[in-house]
Image (cartoon, rainbow, N blue to C red; front, side):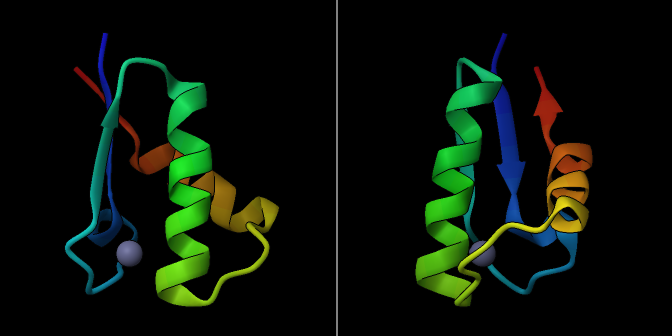
Length: 58
Ligand SMILES: [Zn+2]
């Protein structure tokens, strides 16, 4: 199964998307992107909830 995430799915005007084989591989990539591109140093439980809900399984 593949997991994908698109930044715009959580309301960001951003073209970033990522796809991995495992869900746990996705979060570090999203975290790094949030930090470098959006200045989000800490993923809050609220944001994590949003992100998790936006993850698509295919
Ligand atoms: Zn983004």
